[in-house]
Length: 344
Ligand code: SF4
Image (cartoon, rainbow, N blue to C red; front, side):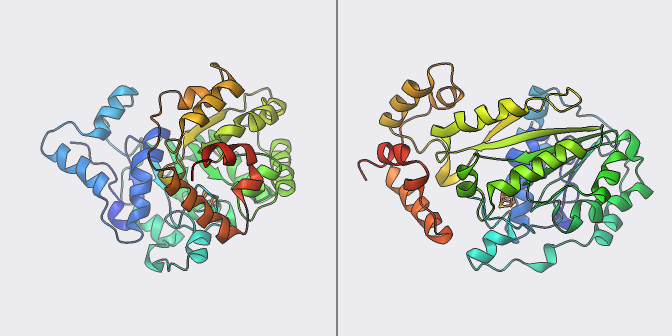
């Protein structure tokens, strides 16, 4: 019997079989909900099913993607030690960002801000002899040197030269020599840069950050990162940027490869909740097909999406976000605004 999220009771997400897909779509959000003492219904469902010899969602996904399911120890550590973040991005919320919690005046339970020592004391109890990857997300892992603070002392129990390090970051923190030295110890480093739009569009999506700082940090990273590092651009596709995907794709052409010739991937995933691409009208579908053609990513993403019956709810949510940020979707993308909300 494989137990997933073996350390969830500690407010962590540590798994034996996770990969990008599982971590992002299911278990990591559940762990984050745990930080607010909400029951982790999704994870518990899998655990209950597996304890009763029923194939769970987790097992099905692992099988589909060919992920090893039988092992003697933890393969991947998915660590979300706190929600400390300096941004309140449009597609995010108080369950992932302390800035969002502050903006919405929702207190975060401080008990779930694990200390580095506490994290170490918990992790060291487990068999890490088969560990392949350490994955840290947040919050913002590079803020306050958190990546180093939380992971560096694991070198007492893990041989970093045999392990991959993967972390998300929002591009607001410039790479420094301390982080370069830390990253150099790993077999491979996958640094995922979150980015939903470029230039002025970035300022709209990633409140309150500014594009000039983002691009400066990105170029510094590309110039100075250690040779074991693979950066990627991770975009969240939502109703906010579906009409502007080409802007980022055109920008990305300039950054398709690192200076060592490794590809810099553009990886898309999808927003959930009121900004997801299911908030769509027939007029928007027609517009996207005309603008991007059948081969465009935007069309591929929405062509099978059903027409929404409640566009007004989406408008209300965007207006709510715009008021909190003192920004305007109408100014950010006037064409999309006029097509999507023409009957509201
Ligand atoms: S940087 Fe990441 S954690 Fe912070 S608000 Fe944006 S999406 Fe959320």
